[in-house]
Length: 104
DNA sequence: AGCGTGACGAACT
DNA sequence: TAGTTCGCCACGC
Image (cartoon, rainbow, N blue to C red; front, side):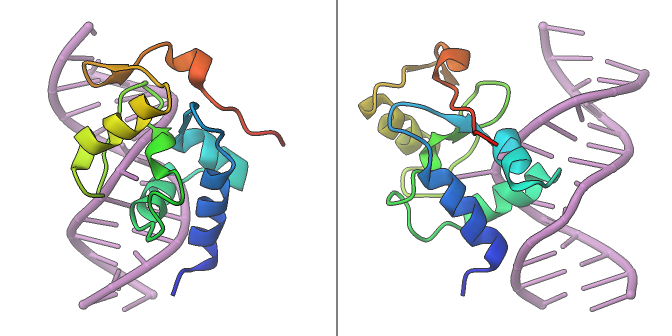
């Protein structure tokens, strides 16, 4: 049974447009919490992947971060590339340009 | 209620 | 610049 917090996180994920990425920090800010770790925990337990684009979430340093789904990080990178997000040497290329910013 | 863990972030050394 | 420390809080035990 998903908690209200997790549903909120997944809903935020679903707002990310194809070919873009966002960060855990942005999601946390959007949800009104300072605990990005809680967001990471919730995203990691996403049972709807890849229906919910959890692979479009990366750390604020522009790297890929982690992925609990099938194939791990490599799979995450493959999914991003298919959407037009370039990934080189474990990090997102032109990260700031591809960064999706939530509206308040 | 307390403790450890976690797909992180920012500050500090 | 890299590595460490602390903070954050949801969740399971």
